[in-house]
Image 1 (cartoon, rainbow, N blue to C red):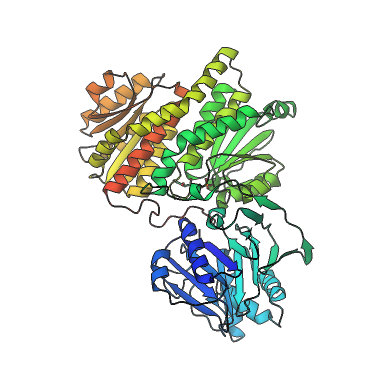
Image 2: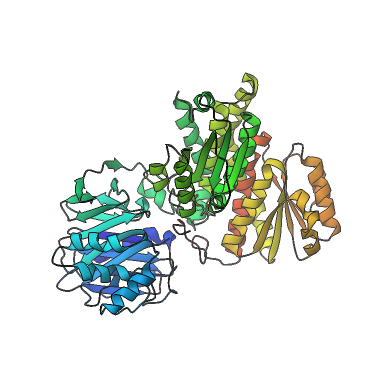
Length: 594
Ligand code: F6R
């Protein structure tokens, strides 16, 4: 949710911190702040975006500092609630991402011991606890403070001493970027790519003492080695590259993402997931868990795997999983998470591991928490996804699901060969969707005048309707609902009328006739109908008010071309309405609270 950064080296720290924060803004953007070490500790923070802070902040000097971009959870967005937070004397500054569950009792305790609090945040207890335990050794004080804390945290601690930063993590991401006589701290890899591609991922429970020449990591009181990783993402991938928004750039990257995934998997002889071995081990069903867009990818995955592999697949929303009395006998669990840091998904993984269920994670972020707790990780090749609204990661997740399913398909060789051909043709089909932008833009202009929209689909395109609605609502603020087309008559019909357009996803499969009937029913109730239909479908033109044609693909791949079309529709609609597309209100890219 929030983004935290730190720097120690020879550079002027303020500009480095602001540059790191600018790259992390997708994690939170209601306020931000920095603290710099020197003769005294200097803090500057405000309820503004990073660009405004860059303009407003006085020059603080110094070569060591910390920074934070906030997505408010505990305490409204305000200057006083913005990070960094300090102890009473203003000698210790802390930036924090996570949630301190027992902060109320810690706060009461600290107040009774004479500490004064000025913010409403949970974070503020941390500098006060460090102050309480400080006797000249900062890392020992941090260690003692964190023993009192229950919850999740990634923190960077700074004092006036410019020679070191102390960092720690538990259940929230934190990396150290290694430079040449300088080191960087960040919540996420894209922040540091301008400076270095050498990274250490901290483990839960690690405390790091970072100087400009050295990184010492301690776990349970013992010094430990943490492997250095080389990041293959490059700076350009984390920049807008001439597009107006990251979202548009990321939508346009999808042909490349599909190609990269194919190259990756067609080159390896090893099965992506050894379902055969699992069958031998008695695995009888698959459970897929995820949130948001990743959940909709999982729903598409159910259709793909049940059709191709013939195993029963259950899909659950990760945040609901702990409330079910699940039977998990002989089940393979797959979790899908772009960030690998979604708290609800991580909680579900822990529960699965607790009952000895084998967990395969599909994630986009190397070294993410999901990759570290799962038994096996499959990386999507989407590259960094900066826009809060997920686009290319959805397509990359589908590619992995196709590949897993095709690896174990019961389909005959001819079908599989035709599917492989279909997959190879997908990049050019998606490119044709992208080249169809003008028609989508016209439809978006029309849609942008409305406040309520339904998306309907059937079969493998029902999850596409859900994803289309999510994309539209989150970036254009139009209320949108995705529905199984057959369900409209069981309630939503009462709402239909000329003020509520219906977007129908019409595939050339066994759902086609039923979809036409649904469209007729909608038209009778005077709702304008916009249809996504395969090229060559003339019947649909007689029924729908608007038709967006999509390239012909095998139906199993239709979620890809249809979703990309709906991503563009959402994008242009939001643009027409003047919305802040990459940073929708109240949302954050990585949702690290339950
Ligand atoms: C929507 C969106 C979110 C995420 C969800 C899960 O555009 O981005 O719904 O899909 O927060 O995130 P991950 O996949 O990182 O677990």
